[in-house]
Amino acid sequence: MRARELYDYAIVRVVPRVEREEFINVGAIVSCQRTGFLQAAVELDEARLHALDPWADVALVRRHLQALAAICAGDAAGGPIARLPHRARFHWLTARRSGIIQTSPVHTGWCDDAGAALEHLMDCMVRPLPRRAPEPTPERTPA
View 1 (cartoon, one colour):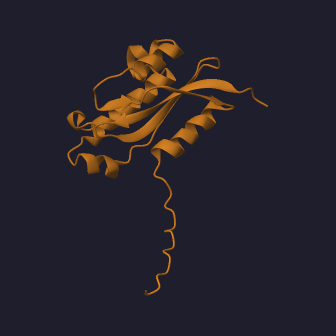
View 2: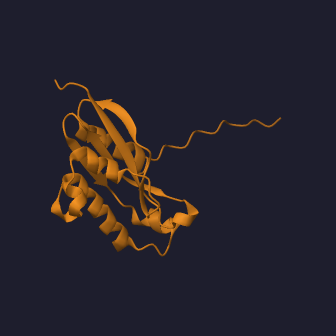
């Protein structure tokens, strides 16, 4: 059985028109310092993006999101930031900025498996929620 680990996470947001401060959640970054885990998961829903900005440049947004994932992975495609130590990359990625790709404040949690925590965050914070059956309406009797 794995030991419980402390981890940090941030939600990745696309803010297509920064001046409007509207955003959609498109991913999550999870970092576990003790184990050296740093990974991002990203899922861009183009329909939701275009609901906020019909003229959003999807290709540009995808390039930025791919760079974010490359930096997390320490991939050379992430440029010089990807060569930084694990925690420095996490802090660079989660620094406040006013670009079209932003992150939420950093939060902390406990997990048994950082990869499973990342998947849970994607389910709870990024992926569309499953539709619930409508609540039955109470029958009204004439007065």
